[in-house]
Image 1 (cartoon, rainbow, N blue to C red):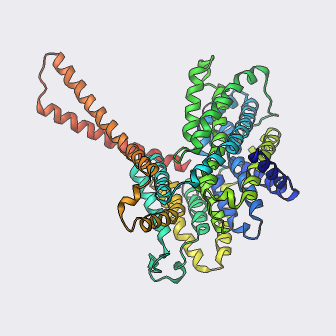
Image 2: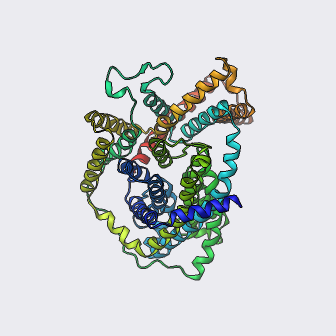
Image 3: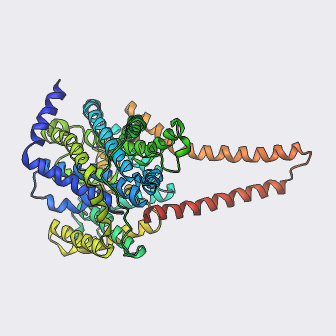
Length: 543
């Protein structure tokens, strides 16, 4: 009952005219950036960070949440109309959605995506209301060793899962942790990684880092690889669904929600895995499996529901534990830190009005998105006609202006350019961006918890596993890192045994030379797969 009264207070704050206006602006802007390929909600939120210095914290956070939800909605439009996912999470939607559009069923595809997103977003937000306070009560009882272990788990799992290579993931994480170390040691006052450059003594501003990595890096990458020809749009009418479409969509909406929310709440979850699982599940359960690959409406409804449910799930660890699980949540967390608000379990206790107004605004924004996306889908398609030189020139202008307005220092512009080139290099070599951003934000927080742990244990390393939860988390981390290696070794051994068995069954003898040839062929295969993985990672970033 206490949670319900707090939620009602949140609705009272979110329904004020000012906050309603910011929610509307957020969902419209979020839908627009979701429609435009390569411009995700993380970049939009990062660009707007400098403009929110003078705003009320709750209003700015409500607008950011609207951008986040809107980006999930808008990404499906380009996937369906142009086979160009605006977000990585909408790649699966393009498989069936674009085939539906080419068959003249773009209206139905857009409608099931919009309604499915609304259903999943509403259920996911309701689950957030239920789950987040429980997580907070549990988290308040934890000590510094457990918090440090949780942060290490978040960093390791996100790094190990994202990208085509674990080496690239950990390389990006190392860069982020190094950037987070720049400045003055909080205990000894010793300068770290400043190279005698005075503006670095106070550390790198997270706003400058986020804008450089997302906006500058992406703009440089697009300028280097894509041409300025406007995309060809496919005309669509007013989105509507027939009785059969509704019948085939409502179960995938619910199943997609069941996949999306828990994966969004996991440190390495995200929206890509549940959308894929939803698509595979619908293909197996469908009464029309022959339509998959040719425009099955279930292949749009399920993944889009999983996509938006994961967005609500992502906010659970961000609000309850202060741990972002994707880039947009990381930038939102940076905004709270910038405002002097300490994220974590005490956020619900110290800033209840802010938290519950944000959660209430998610229900409001979700409804606004449905009302906007159904009738305005043809309008969003026209945004794709903006020539890329004009589009990214505007992004570069606002990024530069925003970075300079943080501290009014020319040095920030040089840092913006240097870190922007780093963001370009990440995309060039297939390194995931999220581990770097998490390293910058969570790195200093993890260092603080590590220092507290050693202070409590008088410098004894045993203090790291002095709590049962910390021990369990370290075991989980070890399993996550070692399990893929063990699986690879077992598969290799089974392949060798199968060849040996085949040779013996034919009555022949397996010589040492043949075994060495098998080992050489296996090594060459792994090397080729590694090259393929690198190209795949680069192509994904390029898209």
